[in-house]
Image 1 (cartoon, rainbow, N blue to C red):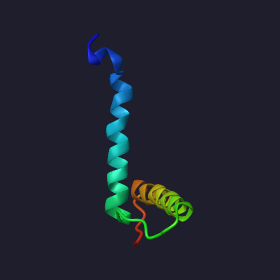
Image 2 (cartoon, helix red, strand yellow):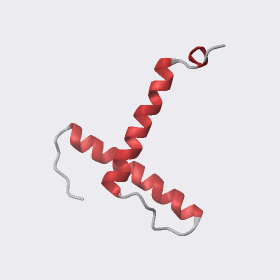
Image 3 (cartoon, helix red, strand yellow):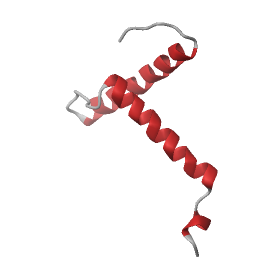
Length: 67
């Protein structure tokens, strides 16, 4: 059985989109979490994701924001 038959091309393409989003988040908001505990690290990551959503919305509608 060939490996190609195990993967759906449209579904596998989602991986590159997710990796691109992660790359943008790291580039814009930094690649390190400052928190020490796991609980606060998770919160910080969720906050960065939320900020990315606002960032993407602002860029979509050409709203100027300063970081």
